[in-house]
Length: 396
Image 1: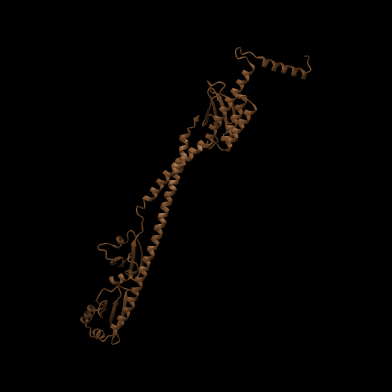
Image 2: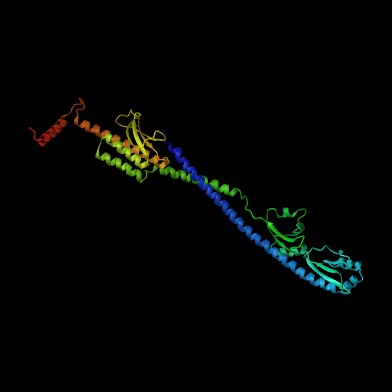
């Protein structure tokens, strides 16, 4: 059999409730942080995409200008004469003095800047109705173009890559690879030459949003909330334990009081006390034992996992009396244990009152010195016998 330890058991649900509050508020803080950083990440990604869109527009404009420039060069007499007479030196001089211009010679060799496939314009040059070569004007992004694209968002960085190799970064970043630049950033990519090999891309990126000490705030909020709620729940539990039992128990105690008003017999009170305790705690059964011997039982009796409440019977205080209750399958909760203790305390008062009432009655009809019946007892008994004789028509 096990007895209740109310302060220790009462502390367990308080701690659990405080932990639940702490975990809930800590999780809510983490969710708020995630929501705020998510909104900021979306906003920064939109800025990155705006910059990339602007960069793509500038490259398109440069490609259109390159097409016009290539057409003009191909139609010029100097270039046509150089191709007709196979004067590579003349074409090399033009390429060295004119930015972004290259020539593909009749031999297949290209002189001038490296040509990126898909970025620029190429115009064929014919002499004597035969293809003599090509004039190429590139539209490759440069530092000036990247700076212009970033004017709408200076916090956004731009990188120009060819075949995954970093060519140019704005603002400059010396000695870093593309993966190092994009680590921990919000980023996006736009292709400048779709379908060509190698791929040519503009990459936009900026720092990922974060909240200072972001990993600390959920823990700190959870711990503070748990401590505050523990104090509040502890005070609430103390008030609950100090308050009278709920209506179910009050009804049971009222039943004990009504029985006491009807009789002052201690033996008649014991069944009522047991019934009230079983019903109030929803026990499957119970017993009252005195000196280790069961004097009264009700419902199912199981010898294990019982809940004991001490009863000090006033008739013989030397005897140890116990109210023993047997729990349902889910066990007794804290309220059931409090109810049993409350009923036991009221039962002790009722039994003591019954003992005192019997003692007063005995003193009223006996002589205090000899212990024999006094004149009042004699007259009362005489009246009782006369009344009995009249009912039975006996002789007086």
